[in-house]
Image (cartoon, rainbow over all chains, first blue to last red; front, side, top):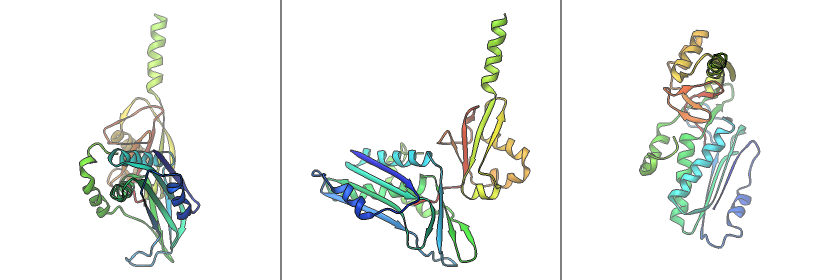
Length: 159
Length: 99
């Protein structure tokens, strides 16, 4: 089992990530990846960029812990998590989660679990930049609700 | 006798010391401060520690005591009744918004 965690300013290639997950991997029949992009927000002005900051050291530990939690729940042989920080323009890639498993269900669920926990626990903060102003993004209750489906392991999960 | 006095002094010195405080996100921006070092004489709860900061900088009260501020002690999420000790790293920040 392997876990790769990266917090970086530079972009990543989904193709390269996919290759790293699938190459020399004869036991797994499923690769699921998720890529998050900077989008135009619907409220008010159009977002032209995002600025992301994080807590170096703690963020990597939390992401590692989330990945390990996922591996205790599903048979996920390989997990790769990349989160970018810094100034990201509209359309740029922000986050990547990729997992491999023997079958698709574990891979789908594992990837979703990791994203749900990342959104709720990983120490990143996002600021939206508009044409003439900027605004820190508020925590969304919908992200908290997304955790409820994993409630059975919530009790012993990452604080 | 002399040795006993030294031990007591050592214990006092061990309890007193510096705490590294970090701020992130909107909190960092509003306080206009990303980090500071604070001297403490003895261990105290995170709540008491925040109050000590507010006594030194009253204009921080609205951000540290009246808002939803999360705390991490030595890079582990912590509740506000946990004790801050000399040598600790305490981070204070708003709810996270990554992904």
